[in-house]
Length: 422
Image (cartoon, rainbow, N blue to C red; front, top):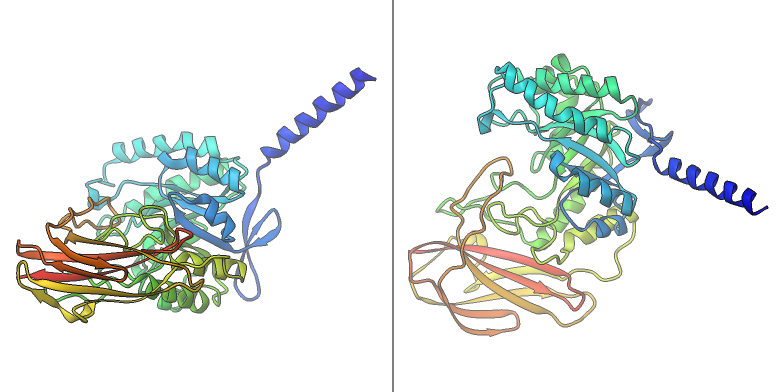
C-alpha cells in the first residue's frame, strides 16, 4: 500500500511539473467587428505596462501583461511574470540605424540574427510568453529600408520554431510609408505595435486610411512627449503635473484605446521611474518607489474600482504666483516663494520635498538613457508645509523647481516649473 501511494505521489508530482511548463497558445482571429486576441481559446485584452519594477502593483492593479524591450532583462521579467501570473511581450532589441548600425552590412545583420536565436529557442515554450516584439522604433531617424528585411527574417524564424505565439514590431508613431513597407516586406509580422503619445487620437483613423488590414496594439502610450508640449521662451519643455497626467491617461484609455475593435490593448508607459528630460516626465512612479495618481487611474480602468488608498492630487504649483507657462525669469540670488496646492482625499497629513535642479544638458532621443541633472546651488530661506521661500541660484542659466508630496501611505504626487536666471 505504501509503495502504491509513493508511486501515485510521484505521478502527481510529474503531472504538476508538466503542467507548469504547458505552452499557452496565443492567436489573433478576425471577427465581424475587428480582431480579437485569444489565449488558450479565451478572449484576452492586453492590460499591460512597459515595466522595470513594481510587478506586484501591476498585478494588484489588474494588469495582465509586461512589455520588455531587450533580452538582457528576460530572466528577471519571466521570473516575475510567473510569480505574479502576468504575460510577457518579449522584446528583441534590434540595433538601430540612428545608433550607427548598418542594415546593408549582411555580416552584422547575420550576427545579430544569430545572437537572438538562442533566446527565442529558450523562451518559445515558456508558459507566460504572450507574443514576440521584433525591434522597437526601427523607423526612428532612418533611411535604409533594409531594416524591414531583418525584421522579417527574425519573424519568419519565430514562426518556423514557434507556432503558438504571434509576432509584432513597434514603430515610433506611424506614417503611410512605414505601414506599406511593413505590409510588403514583413508578412510574418502579425500585429503592428505603435508607440504613440500626443498623436494617439488619430492612430485608428490613420491606419484605416493607410489600408492596414491587421490588428494593432499600443506599445507605449501615456503623457505627451517632451517634443509635443509647449515650451518656455528659452525653449525648455513644460511638463504636466501628476494630476494633469492622470486625467490624460483616463481620457486616452477610455476614448482612444477601448473603442477601437482592431486594437488588442496596450502597454502604458512607463511603469517605473526614469530620467528623460526630467526625472518625472514618463514614469508613473517616483524614483523612491511612490506611486502617483496615474497608477490609481490604471487600477480603476483595469479593475473598475479605485485602490483603497489614493495618491495625493497636485492641483497647482507656482513661483511668486506664476505658473510654469509664465516664462519665469529671475535675477541671480533673488528671493522668491514657491507654493503647491495639494489634496489628500483621505484627509491625512502630507509631507513636502522641494528640489531645484539644473536644466538637463544630456538630451537624447528615442528613450536613450540620460544622466540626472545636478542639484542647483541655491539657498532655502524658509520651508513650511506647502511653501518654500528661497534665493535663486547665483549662476545664470536654466533651472527647474520640483515639488514631491507624499501621504501617510507613501503615495506621491509631483510638479515642476522651469525658470531662467538671467
